[in-house]
Length: 158
Image 1 (cartoon, rainbow, N blue to C red):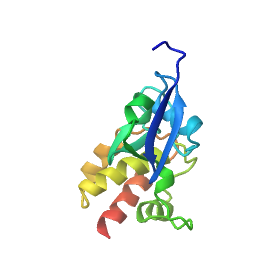
Image 2 (spheres, rainbow, N blue to C red):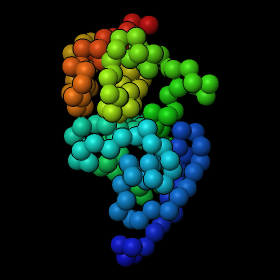
Image 3 (cartoon, rainbow, N blue to C red):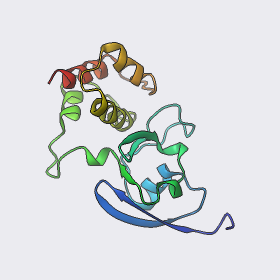
């Protein structure tokens, strides 16, 4: 396979079976945004450090900028677009972010929401230290993190 050859990548994105072509070295973040139109997945550092591109792959939070599109073949991928109801009603985590002013520019928010979606599914009643540990994998230049911690604590109490 040469570097210009394209391959068909089929996956389930937010509950819908979809497919598109990708170059073998195309990143999943680019495939989601450019190939499938899931633009809620943001690309920040492209080195896996900032966390903006975090998605769930088979239920586990992963950096889509460190994953090749072809690695998602046949897998279930969820992006931030999957969190709200079809009528636009926010899910409890999103609503808690709103309640606690946990976002400002919003660039990092999709990745943080996806990381905490995975984390809270595995640990519904985390300590503040555990919340901050998960949050340490994300860079936010606007919020100072206090609102994000408060939002996750709100969901954990519910």
